[in-house]
Length: 205
Image (cartoon, rainbow, N blue to C red):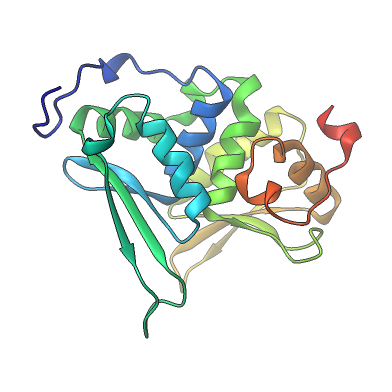
């Protein structure tokens, strides 16, 4: 395979979100993805998420195409951080297309794995898994788009808050819908499966 920047044997222009794994990866990248002019990847402190993204890359690239940088804790960084990426303009352009109009590419049956990726990348919940469940966004358009997706599958008590000081938007789940949301994304969420959260089986069956 040619190792020049952006050169691959796959037609990424035709890449589709066709299964749960792909939907999760797109959600994860939309939340916590890295990109430059010709590079696409993931920056995170969670090695499990880095490994998940690495498995996706290996579907298209040989191991030597991938680059991984590790940053040890220091005065500015409390946890070890990882930066995984490949140089591939076509793949980056395709993921940017997904992100700019996600509702065009994610069908109703793939909303939950996509949102699991979003949650794993930029979501949080209180230790009781009941309160303060939210996903952070860099712009209002993405938050509103995901809110519409969640309404498609029955969630009605969610709200978007604008935190002007941090220039972020948070999609908040009501306490009455938090357990339902976490239980439904549990089969796809790497973070939840590594936590002590116990899903309601009647919701995910």
